Length: 384
Image (cartoon, rainbow, N blue to C red; front, side):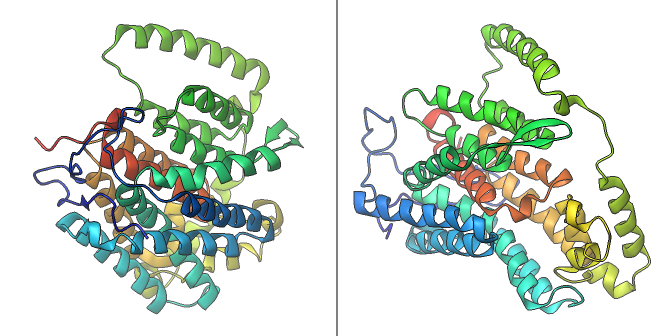
């Protein structure tokens, strides 16, 4: 499927050279600036867009089948490029950590929702690793497959809905994922598309999404230029004024109910047995407990993925989870944009349920993989 893709290797985190080594340098495409290489045939791109469009359409059916189609497609894409991947210490460490988490979920406590919830959680956890590898080994063909279908879906399905805090645009995290993809694009006028997407994220009035988008944007800014600071300060002033006037929810302070639920689950975890504290209460246990509360219909989830991992997989799972994030970020540490994209995902998990947003995760991971492999502005990552 992708037998002629560039080779990506993953170095040991924290030691020596960059986490994703630069590809072999050949002739340069004068239009795109990237290394000349054979690309996916047009029928492959069209077929990929069809699969992605199907996964978006299935979101209306509840999301589980949509994520299954999404994950299976990109797993197959990565499988077609396996021989181009060098299994370095960094990648091997990441795979061992992922295997450890999966084993803990499969064979750990089963007080939650049983086998279905275990499979669901494992699938969610695989989105970032699969997307990161896909972006690194397949490259910009990922954008040709994913972005057209995603843009078409966002245009057709986006709408405002009324709340007691004003009108909000839906699909905040899909727009956030699309912004991450735009940040590694090379086509002309991409800045206009990025600004439109950023506007959509602001209109969603989802504060953590706005914060994550700004973290992503930091990876694109050249702070060494004086004009950047001048224009940036002016832009910040304009945006701040617009937010205060038209998007009040972004600056409101109110009790969303999160703290009360976090406190409740902290007490349950503290009062659990030693086995539950170390190995967790089991996949799906959060939703099972919440379903017994009167606020389940409006709240629905814990809104903190890091706490959820601790509760469902215990201290052992939380340690593997934190170590895994450290390894992944270390592997792309030579490219600021890739680091910022992954950090933005990590931040959204503090107050939201990002693990459930498969399309958002895969978009950000693919963008980080592309950025890490090619380096900032499309230039190969230096190893010296």
